[in-house]
Image 1 (cartoon, rainbow, N blue to C red):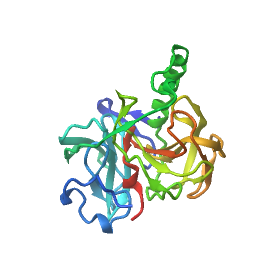
Image 2 (cartoon, rainbow, N blue to C red; image 1 turned 180 degrees about the horizontal axis):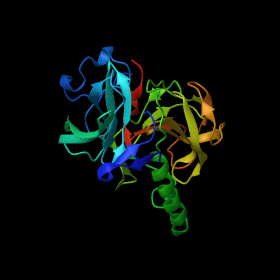
Image 3 (cartoon, helix red, strand yellow; image 1 turned 90 degrees about the vertical axis):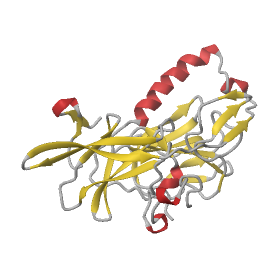
Image 4 (tube, one colour; image 1 turned 30 degrees about the horizontal axis):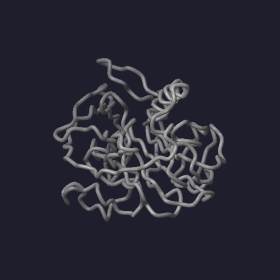
Length: 292
C-alpha cells in the first residue's frame, strides 16, 4: 500500500495525491446526472458517494473511508472524493476523514454524506458443473489462497495525481446480469453479484475501459482466466471468464488496448464477460463509471 501512518494513527497517502437504471432511488440522489462526466453519484449500497472536500485552488487533500484511502479528483472546480460504498452499507449518515496539509501543518476533519436504502433483485441460476457451486475438498485450499490474493488485489492502492475515471465498455454487447443481484445458485443462496455481465460470444475482443496497469493475469477457480487492472488511487477493474489473455503483469494499457478474448472459463453458465469495478476496496456498479 502506498500510504503511511500519520498523526493519531490515521493512514496518510504518500505524494500528490449507459445511464444507470437502478442507482437512483430518487432524483435527489443524482442531481444533474445527465450533464455530469462519469462517474455518477449514487449514494446507495454498491454505489458511489461524491463528497466535496475543498476548492481546487487549495492543495489536494486526502480522504479515508473505513480506514482506506479514497480516490480524490478535481471536479467542477473542487476537490471531490469518490467513495465506493459496500453492498453491506447501512442506510443513514456516513463520514470520511479528510486530511489537508498547509503551511499551518496537518488538519483533520470529518465530512459527512447520507446513504439511501436500496434493494436489489433476486437472480436464480443453474450451474451444470456442481463442483463450481459446492467445490470438492481437494479444491478448497486453492480457493482459499485465491480468495486471499483477490482480497489483496482489490484493495491495491497506487498513488496517482490524475486518474481517468471516464470509462467505456470493454466490449459491445447486451448487459445481462446486472450489478447487485442477490444470487441463488442451484437452489443455494450465494454472495450478491459484484459485477456486470456482458452477453457476448466466446472469442470477442475485450478492451481496457481506461488507462491502467495490469496487476494480475492468471487463472482462478471461480473466475477462470482473469485480468485485473489498476487505474490508480484504489480504482480497480476485473475481467473474468476469459478464453484467452493477451496481456502480462506490469503492462501499461491505454483506453481500448486489447486485454484478451471473452469465454466461459471458471464458474460460468456460458460465454460472457463478468466485469467488476472496485473503489477503495468495495465493489461498485460499473455502469456508474460509464460515459453518458
